Image 1: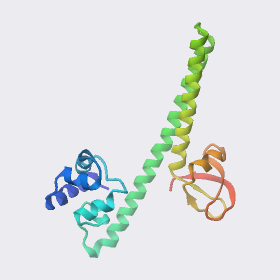
Image 2 (image 1 turned 45 degrees about the vertical axis):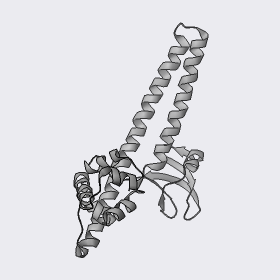
Image 3 (image 1 turned 90 degrees about the horizontal axis):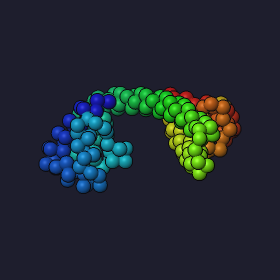
Image 4 (image 1 turned 135 degrees about the vertical axis):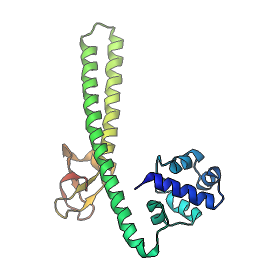
Length: 201
């Protein structure tokens, strides 16, 4: 999706309706800075905001994703193109998230080891040693929860039995036995438990 084109289209339709950025923002319950970001192609509106935005601007969601008013003859074709682009964008974002998970995890482990070694062998007062170990342990636990959240939302898990692909709940990911990114979980579709691999597509 061309964010610049979509942003220009939002601006064009807003001006056609004689609505200022501030007025549009107030009607959507957001800041005018968010509207400015859309119109400058920095980001897209949130999924929850899109239907109301389209209603205010008298356009369809397909028009919004296309960055132009779509002729009814080409509507279905354009819709398919937009869905494919959204799917590709999600796959790319998921890849980046999973890569980030590895990088942050590796850096966290290295920092944790360095700080624990420092607290264990460097000359310092006992209370300083305990503070360093305590803060480091708390930080690594917090990072672990964040990394688990990334693993939950990025991509899908695929059931070995029915090949259903789904995003599990955070709790089910947290409780599941795992080996790398393969987790032993219950499929919400067939109800069977299996070792389910992380897939992006």
